Amino acid sequence: MRLTPRDTTYFDLLAALAQHLVRGSSLLAELLGADKAGREKLAEEMHEVEHLADDATHSIMRRLNQTFVTPFDREDISGLASALDDCMDEMDEAADLIVLYKVEGLPDRVSDQVQVLQRCAELTAEAMPRLRSMDKLADYWVEVNRLENQADKLHRKLIAQLFDDLAGDPVQLMKLKEIVEVLENAADSFEKVANMVETIALKES
Image (cartoon, rainbow, N blue to C red):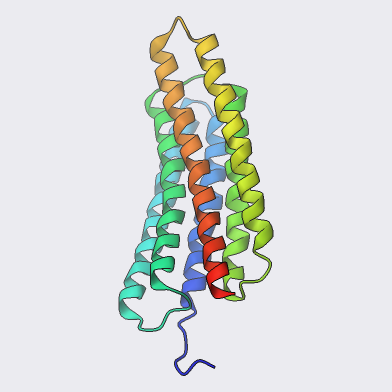
């Protein structure tokens, strides 16, 4: 039995932060199919969501400095918030690069990459509220790990395709390769979140 009540606001803050990832991944998917003007507008919206995610992360960090008793280890809360924010940062960077590099055509597998990120974001947003009870989280981290493996395979195929298709256009090759790499980093970041949730759940079990 706990002698000191725990501050459960963290669960709401982490859930809100994860919802920004859902919005960010949706904007990224929209951006792929938009024209130049549409992409610029969507990239601006993405920046706004990224700022909201930053604000949510800072709120968690400030609360950690003001709260004596936390629902679980404060280092885990801090690490989880930072990892969630990293997911948003990677997606924002990908959107930014697509606009800055004026990329007109993207391989179909880039859309497949973004679909993986969308599913990871949805699963992450569904999982965060379950941290309250630490219940039914195993399916979440198992599925995100499976999706990250899928993202790895897509990434390898995309890189091979780019070198095949753009051997005579090194500038375009470099642009697309960087975008593809950032999207892969985003998938890795979602896996990192899932692995952290698994670690927290094991500690608390």
